[in-house]
Amino acid sequence: MTAAPKGPGRPTALRALLAAAAFVLLLAGAAGLARVLQFAYATPTVSEYLEHLGGAGTVVPAGELTYDGHNFRCGRFPTVLNAKLNDYGAAYFGFVLLNPDRFATMSPMVKRYAYAHECGHQYVGYDEGEADCYAIRRGRREGWLDRAALEEICGFISRSKGDAVHAFGVRRCEMMKLCFARSRPGREPL
Ligand SMILES: [Zn+2]
Image (tube, rainbow, N blue to C red):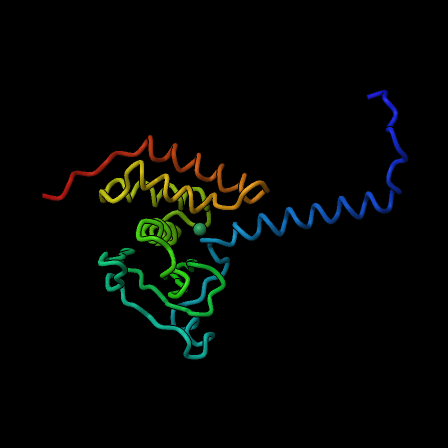
């Protein structure tokens, strides 16, 4: 570029401050969505976690969680309900974590995806993309996830518009669509 700026440039200090502010906003935005359904980097046992909550948590044994008439299963892993959890759901190695109030606000399909995602962390580890893909494969295999359902889930994931969070959600959705295309539908239950 050789063209001179039309007006006086912003003072360097102000420009640096604006750049810093934009960076912080970007980080905050990304963290906002990244926190949704993110794996927690710690490994307490169920009883240690309950102790930490000081009696505010409830354990639902493996296979006994039900929402919208559907059973939510994650192998041998129980679910801990924590009304103070700052997200819809999360996972520690050994159990799935839900905020029952927030979880209840999601549509039945998004609930199934979200739970399968958190469950996926038990099998795939920390990787968010892998946990998403696990949820997609599982939904296809169990027969509750079709293309329309995937769009509904993508709508939830990508609901923030016009910022870094939106781009993050859109990218995540694209990866989920790839997983969908590569997965095989299970047999319809007879
Ligand atoms: Zn996650």
